[in-house]
Amino acid sequence: MIHTKWQNSPTLKTVKCVHTNAEKYTVSSALTAGKMYEVKNETEEFIFVIDNTGKVGAYYKDYFEL
Image (cartoon, rainbow, N blue to C red; front, side, top):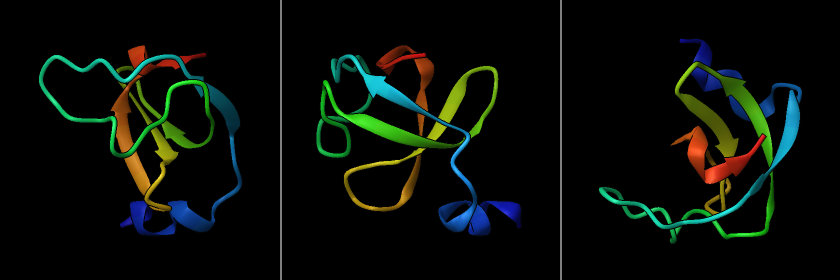
């Protein structure tokens, strides 16, 4: 269960959220456009960041400027 340690793992990089206009999911409560976020893990489709709730969340990469 490696994902339980992501909160305290070293930051890989920081990314900027460019929009919160989601078609299917509500992300505006967890992300803020223009804010920088710490990346804890990354896959081909998703990026795992510490969001506005203070926890690690998975989001599509198209919300961020990589």
